[in-house]
Length: 134
Image (cartoon, rainbow, N blue to C red; front, side, top):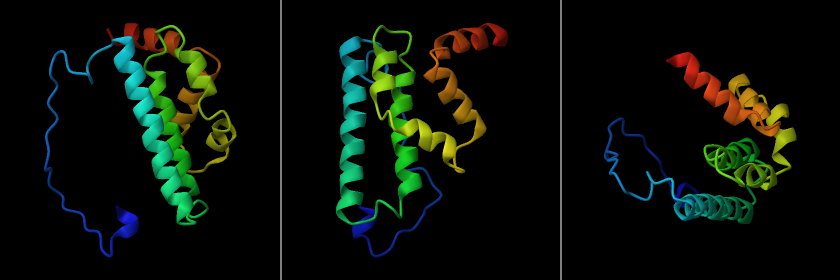
């Protein structure tokens, strides 16, 4: 929508409120619901990337497209304790790894999380972090 707008403004007020409902598709850990959320993220990303590409803006928004790919890829990371999701994480945007470590816009924390996920230690790290916080 921003590409077709003549003017964009920011209003510093919330116009929506999140409501977490037990049993909602967002809160469920059901494999089918997880797969649907991941697929929806991938489809939405492809749509945004194709619109940007169609307008010849891929180079201009290169860093933003990297960030968007990282967001999509990280949405898979939260399910690493389920079988098969590590492989899916590795297969999703495999070319992203070099961009993550080359980009000056990616924080060291994000790079660290990416690295431990890449080598397969993210679930172990999260369990250790959880124990330390108790």
